[in-house]
Length: 248
Image (cartoon, rainbow, N blue to C red; front, side):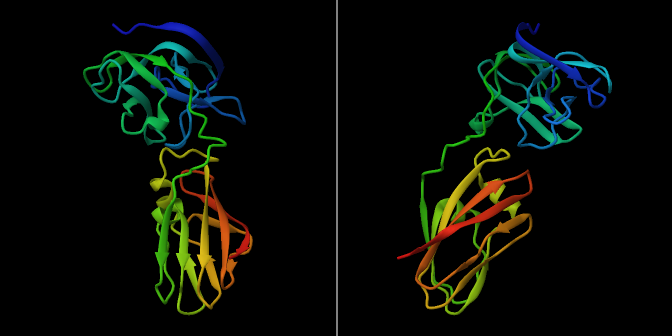
């Protein structure tokens, strides 16, 4: 039988009907202060819902301690757990995150044998999203394609692209979805920098793709390099900012 030990609980009004989500991960909305289900897979839950309120009733969340949690599968003692997210109405169960350690939210204390069993889990300090921690591993890519190209997510996340087109072209960045899918455990506000060096005799322009907003001047003159900052805005959008040019 799953056990509990309260350390820290918070409460608020249920923003929606949560009567079917007792012992699921939930969020305390930063704007309304109300308790709701997760909106996206990259949202950080505040804790585990302890009761089963309908919309407008009081909801109680355990933030720290040992709590019951509905499992999405058979999960062994010691397994690190993240919130499962299938959709906005199918979310919040405990899911194995051994291969995705950046999203750890708790660890199994008493096992489950099948989906919808109640686990006992120890809630851990929630991930901050890596604020202020830069990505330092660099992959240098060289591309001499004469015409325009579409950069891959791996190329821009890699950090440094040396580009030599055969004429003035407009290369495009990857879609926001491709960028976000290639990042390890991304959250809203996470960011990384990358640089593009233009080694040709022609002006290189950087164009957008689905879900990406470009901010600033996106041209790179001949024999210059430009640094960019990519900021994740949501599960499907990001903004790429021009950060300045260097002559080399």
